[in-house]
Image 1 (spheres, rainbow, N blue to C red):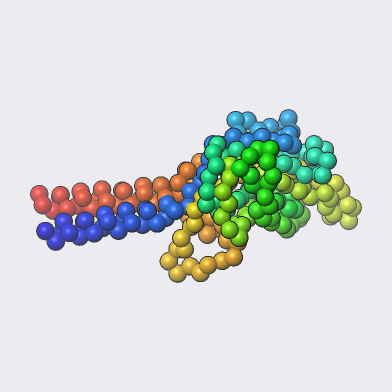
Image 2: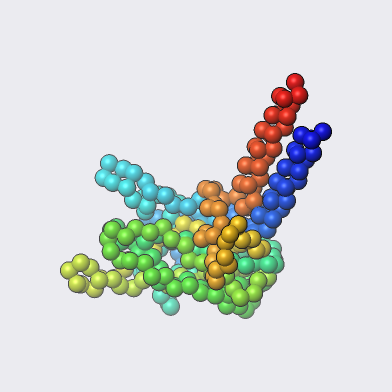
Length: 256
């Protein structure tokens, strides 16, 4: 009887933990978007790569290891930027959603091959594609231009209040120039992006964690797997489910 009660309590706590951690949801997964600034033909966007939940990882070849070789990255040439010098992405969430609390854009900074992180990302939202877009927030990016400073980073914006809408516009400002080792100022050609993410709901603090201004799921939550699941609580669900199965099996074994 005591074992049955203990097992019941374990399962109840597990379900409670799942419910709490599932509060923040990735709602951009596999959603469609339009590149208002086209990607390069050499590093194209194939089948909505920026919302497939997969992040770029290093590819090892005979000549070394580089991130940019990973096909998850979509490449933009500065020559193709719009009149304002920016790259613009318009994401359609499919329907109007409320409680949108965080917006993320992941990028590559790999100066050794001429790819530099953007210097600025701003997010805007609207409930109509051709309507007025409200400013949601912005983030400046300051990555090293040293050739050995490879960074797969994330620009994160959390608006002061949750947003409700269907369309999200990401405006990416690429780096214009950098200073080479010999002191020459050279133009930046490439900007590489691999994922655009919209989060719904509030991520609960982990045990012992203090609130952090503008903290993001990428910085504070369990790292998303690749591909990212729509509900970040599913990872915890799998772990707890396996634990519950093991507990049931153990009780059954002892009874026999």
